[in-house]
Image 1 (cartoon, rainbow, N blue to C red):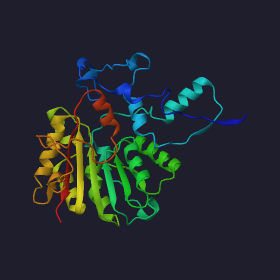
Image 2: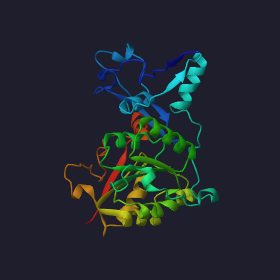
Image 3: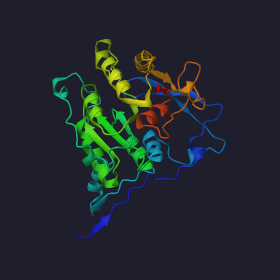
Image 4: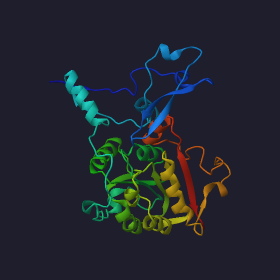
Length: 314
């Protein structure tokens, strides 16, 4: 049977910018429950041209596709039936069945990750390193790696093995030589991994981590004092830590841990006036140049993103 290329469009329809603009009379008259089980209001927008009446309703997965349009992942498959093709697309482009909530204190996750041979992992292992703790699907980090070839290396640490396996497959398809993903519990493995890396650690990000809402589960939250100390000690002078969450309680908890290192860390707005904060000290925009998938979904649902970035003193 002849083989054919299955072309997967970013969107099935062309979405104009006017389709997503909110009018000044927008009202929050609907609500949804987000991935954490928290209800958020949704803004129902209207436009003078009533574009929404002529085009399909935009959903957050489509907004994710638009955000990551530059991150094209090639797929060449045999000629398939309609139902086989649907199954293939769902499997390859995101429909993995993975547990949303993982207990990092379980015995199965208490074994440190094996330190890789960095020369095998990266084309140039002495480049400055960016580490994303809880890298999820990995597309956020892959987008950054594709934008910065030859200047930085990127390491994603993820506690769900299926996501790591898929991310590594995508890295090969994109032929990126400056990014690697590891199945690792950062709380257990971060210090050893970073201590063996030949180059400097320039940035660590922890973005929308599992909130573990119940008080008895707060000890499961990723950012605890030992990890904070390992991050701060491992950072190069001038290195940065970027945190964010769409759950205020979690953002405040992470902020508290990093504020406690005020003798070694300062908030970035004190050294870079171009990064604006609101009255509560949260960054008004994402300084990374790309939003995470969780961030896109949360903002679509009407949630606020709470961000802080810290810089290590020289």
